[in-house]
Image (cartoon, rainbow over all chains, first blue to last red; front, top):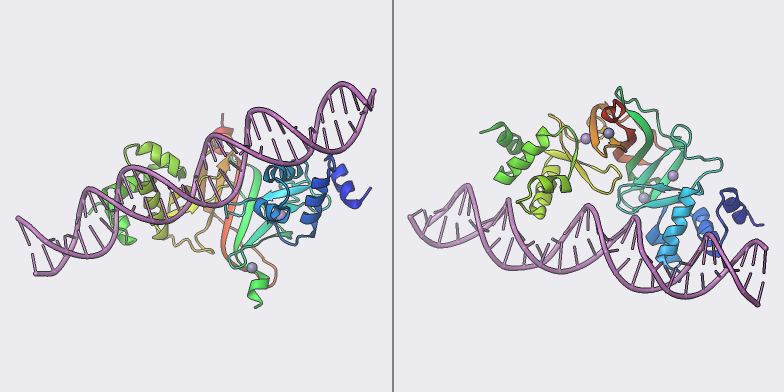
Length: 138
Length: 138
DNA sequence: ATATAGGATGCAATGGAAGTGCATTTACTG
DNA sequence: CAGTAAATGCACTTCCATTGCATCCTATAT
Ligand SMILES: [Mn+2]
Ligand SMILES: [Mn+2]
Ligand SMILES: [Zn+2]
Ligand SMILES: [Zn+2]
């Protein structure tokens, strides 16, 4: 069993050919990807299949979904031992206004947020917009 | 000149009848509103006009736009002296999974975010999802 | 008061992204 | 090999945002 297959097995996702390809694609990417990105890469396969593949990945903790405010949902592989837990796993995301790419800053966890009395947090989304290191370095 | 008119004048927005009505509606709301909300309230006027009214408000600093991750943009009046400045004015938003309402927590400014070398922040969006005080108090 | 111009409004259409229903194919099990 | 459940592919729908263009309104100049 390959490493890729192992990842899916560990998360109770049946390793189909398509899923392995998408998984590999996500793993090789340094930045987050959208459904349109994936669609463009696997131009021979159907959008719905890719859509449901990503959905399955997210539901089973293989990947996480990012709402970076651009209107198109981004996806990225979860780190090893990630449970997408609010307190320990959620990191911030950075969207570059220049290259239009969104990156996971996995080392930058979301700071603890104080809420008014009565409010209960279940999830936190923190997106910083600006210019990324690559675009600044030109 | 009315208070409402004054607000618009101060932000270089010509105070038309429609704009004054929308402004009043926003001012009376304790929570953020979507275009659909406004459309439902002003059922006699056109959606595009309301859309452009909101756009004008946002562009001129009368209101700010909130992406709460629900897929429909929310709007809220800016506080007095707000310049939507990243460091001083940006506050966190809370979206309740129960009542589906999004509120501005204007007293809760966004904490300073450390970014890796080379990254430059221009804007920050922080949305907490969970259960609001009203829904918890039942 | 009337003409004129620029902005505001209304209507219709477009486009992007997400999501669903259903038929077909594939892969596993006995 | 047959049977079954899941995965895939295709078509369609819905929702929200956005634009083009015609018309209306209002402030200003003559
Ligand atoms: Mn991430
Ligand atoms: Mn707000
Ligand atoms: Zn960049
Ligand atoms: Zn609530």
